[in-house]
View: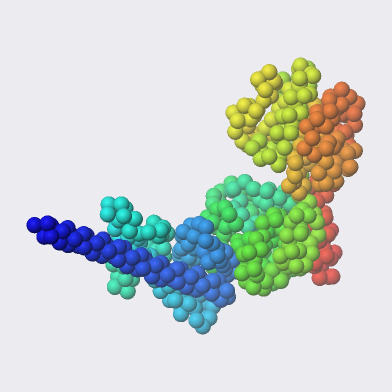
Length: 190
Length: 375
């Protein structure tokens, strides 16, 4: 009898070990995905502020608008403390600039080449920020949920990795279109 | 001559730049010139006749706070039309590096431009990025004025070039005469202070310490304090025995402010630093108050090295208490300082300052137009 019990205990220990290591591996994969999502988000934000800065320096806008835009694009790019606030302020500034009365007719009257391309690029990078942030926050939510399970907590399966944080900013350049149409793809909302 | 003044900030929000432009415009009009001011304005009624509204300002975070500025195509078009219809000999823009009407005016105008820098608010970090955008507009400016040494050095450091230093003016006639507040200064004498109570650089803490000394020696002496800040917090800093002799008015209306200057035997400006000019000091001088002020460079200059007001060792409450005591004991000296202050402040009276500004206009106008400066 004794050998059979030993075998059963050994088997149980082995199964628990496999399960724990599978859970640890899953957490590890979640953290890797989180890092990838964060890198995409950072890249999208940097692209957005670069295009905003390019628009500010393009000579298409009046100098006062250029100055306000350059100020916020620059702070968004160079701030590490308070990044969410700086990025939100850039969004608000972009919204103010793009929704200025007479903005489109003013650009058309100036007959500058490249104006449309630049504005399209700005809108597309802003939309990339919106998508990348959505995916990043989803990854954060999944990771946090996995780390809160008691096994992960008791056995400290996440090791020393810091608890991930949501990235909350105002990032919609044209909020109404997306809300009303119920789609995250502006071209579908058309 | 016809002068167009450009104000970058909303006319209906109180501020130093707006007050400066209002006083300058009125002084120039009194000197016989035609003046039009363009300014953002949220409420278009109740504007003085010389102000042309340029539409609502937009609130944007700028330079660490939310500023109400006017920019964009609509504002640019309004400024362009105003310049075109105005037939001005010259434009005088204020704070041209702020992203608002002044910068737009430089951008669209094709006539001589004078610019005044007020604050030391240019951020080098932003200018580094934005300099190319500013350059072509600011290069049209023919002459620069700075209201303080700090403003001038900011300009020199970030944009190059140089500026003529013309300080802020004070409309002396507004302060010269007023009734004292009922019951002031009173038998035992009174000391006055005006300014932000919770801003250490205004030096109220130095004056409160001095009052502990000088108030203990003189049982009837009172201290009158006016200015924004937490009244209860300041009252808590006064020893209980002296508390009922310290009168805290909090923030007061313009008219009451003038009365405060006329309600005390000694007016005290204990600022510990950061004052480029000290408009409160100039107002107190205009009211003819006998003054005790800290010996900051700017104060020493305005007070004629001590002849138009007593100076004390900056931050030294004992020295301040002694100076206050000496003045309270010597009515003759107080009368002398009062007369000297009233005379010295004439240099900062708006009609005088406006003439200095006109000299700058004369310097940038083409030779043919020089004769109109005096008209």
